[in-house]
Length: 145
Image 1 (cartoon, rainbow, N blue to C red):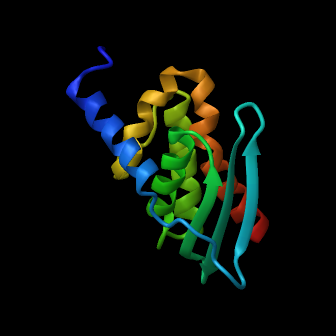
Image 2: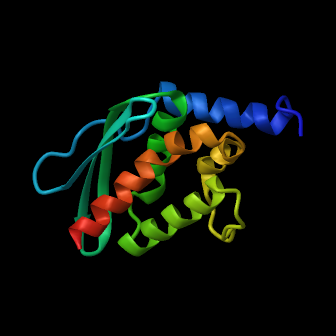
């Protein structure tokens, strides 16, 4: 598939939109799950805060520095998990991980903008960039329980 297909162009626009206009950027104060993670190979880093109430992710924010892939993935991830149950968020993380590894994944769930990152699976060096925020979310939710 050509990298200039209309779908690839659309996906690139979605990724750049999240990079330039990140959703849920910031830090939640107070009683929240608080995780810092970084990718030493490229210097990407993320600070993720989540408010979990009654088994649901009531709010989530991130701060960080990194390439367009890692920061747009963090933005998309926060949008995808806000309002979801912990179980649903962890399932999304598994689906995203499978998608990044080029495996079959459960496409019954509407991934929204996250699908724009599926092309990253063709670039092994960038997969860690895309999965950083997701790994932080998984770590935070596992620590919270």
